[in-house]
Image (cartoon, rainbow, N blue to C red):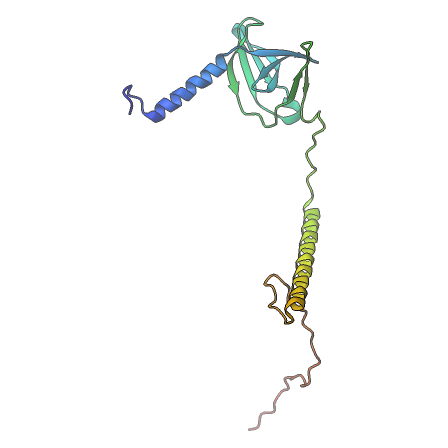
Amino acid sequence: MCGSGWSTAAMGARAQLLRGTYDALRGARFIRAGKGRLLLHRGYTFRLKNNLAHGRKQWYCSSRLTSRCLADVNTEGPEGHERIVRSRYAHNHAPPNVRRFADGRYVVRTPHQSGHRAPAPLDPHHQLLQLQHALALYAATAHATATANASAAVTNTGAAAQPSPNSLPPPVTHAPASKPLLVDTPCKEED
């Protein structure tokens, strides 16, 4: 406990709350891009959604339609002097690439517009085929390596070396059996 009557954990939480409040109450930054005025907050862009009561405005993430992002921000104050009063929800996507040119223009390009494409998901059958191919390739490589190591050891020492624990056992060849197969035949019981 500190002298103020707050525990250190509570003080840490309060300091974190104050830091968040300060961050939220700073002035909003706006940019002009191709489709009008955008709010730029923490690297993400927001579009105006609603004019609320008492001079408040609600802004939604610019990637709301493409990424189904639910992040939104509320601002208040006269235009040009607005401040952020609330920021809700985390973004579910990377921030857009915002570039500012010397003449003051901004260009906003989302990762989708920049040509970044997520790889198409593979169907389970195709994934299984890829895995089988990789395992077969691994087994063939391991066997070839073990065989090469064993032959090199024989050449260097003149005697057969112990096989590697990773090597595959030699294929088993079955010689024709010299004994006839036993077949169960019914026995006659004698009284």
